Amino acid sequence: MVKTISVPHRKFKVFTRRDLDSIPHLHRFSGDELLAMKAVARVLPFRVNDYVVEELIDWDHVPEDPIFQLTFPQPEMLPEADLSRMVDLIRREAPEDEIDATARAIQLAMNPHPAGQVELNVPSVEGVPIPGLQHKYRETVLFFPSSGQTCHSYCTYCFRWPQFVGLDELKFAAREAESLVAYLKDHPEVNSVLFTGGDPMVMKTKVLRRYIEPLLVPELDHIVSIRIGTKAPAYWPHRFTTDDDADDLLELFEEIEAAGRHIALMAHYSHPRELATPVAQAALRAIRNTGAVVRCQAPLIKHVNDDPQVWSDLWKQQVFLGAIPYYMFVERDTGPKQYFEVPLARALDIFSTAYRRVSGLGRTVRGPSMSATPGKVLVDGTTTVHGERVFALKFLQARDPSWVNRIFFAKYDPEACWLDDLEPAFGESEWWFQAPIREMKASGMQPSWGTRSQVRKRITEFGHVEWE
Ligand SMILES: *Cc1c(COP(=O)(O)O)cnc(C)c1O
Image 1 (cartoon, rainbow, N blue to C red):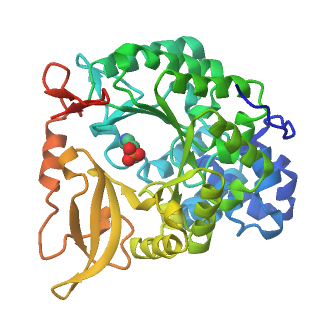
Image 2 (image 1 turned 180 degrees about the vertical axis):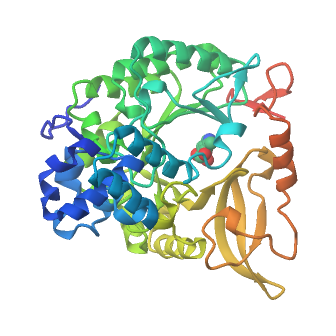
């Protein structure tokens, strides 16, 4: 039974770059400042809804306000020369295609496909690649439903472009679900399917159902958990409370649990303010009432949450509301990274300071973690070995499962912001995982850990499948 939650209804209303002039709160900015925002919004995604505008941003403290920084374009997000090129084009009302071409060139210079996303992760069924699927780590398949490739608001640091599909969503969902099911049937090593995007929660419940219900069949009982990566609990908590199909959504979560699978919402909360409103708290109660578990993750972002107090408040608030701190990520090496990046040494410092301030219940969080080409790399600490100052790193996830939990060392470098900026410690000329990664790239390796027929399996006491 789904419990009705009494928070006021709000109709979803969204602003994109074409609406910048019609957001009354922006009237406090000068014409030049607005023009700069428009220029940035031609290059980086901009989309914000009125709940974020009205309830989350503190307009008395813009532009420094963290949620304003999280959602609105800032002039320094583009290199100065690019910004003035764009401003100039817009000011002299250049033809649209000229503006678009310039914007595209700037985007392409911003490393739009980091971490071998394109060449290394696309799986296939009988040699046919399945777009919308990524299988990088043995246990988990990422699935990008085509109807879930936008968000309720965009984060300024994100570089995934909105792709509206003008097709029949239900038909699309059914077809995509079919390939997903076919792949999973052939891959019993997978025990978790992670729906991601964009934000899968932008889908209507009836569309989401088309994707999820086919996964609940007995032939796929190796799928222990279904996860949904989402920022809706922060940007649009009404999705779980007062939207027309909120009740149906919560029922779907209950059905997943009833079918013997675990449903987890991997909620992206960047700042404790996103957890402070009555509707945000009501959304969490409603989700938790279904048996779903909410696990929380976010990147560490300069201007948004680069402060230990923000993180300890965030984790405490999550624990208080029954959600579980999960990952703190390092900002990826993409998009306007020079604006948002925080050096690894400082990230570690912020993490550790915040971590010390929460009880063990909040220390389920792991981080700072980089989602890099070879895997998820944790910056676990600094230490000195035989007089050399080093970072201790550890794989939390890896393309090769045998690398997981392996510790390795990098020369300490206070400026380094990403794995590529680091050098192996103790005079090694390259990382031990570089040769195998090169091999994977050269062989165009399909990430496969063997199909049903190739790998020996063992059924555990609890009926789970394990692979050797
Ligand atoms: C983070 C991530 C996952 C999930 O990893 P968990 O540690 O199980 O949460 C799966 N696939 C990719 C590509 C990821 O980046």
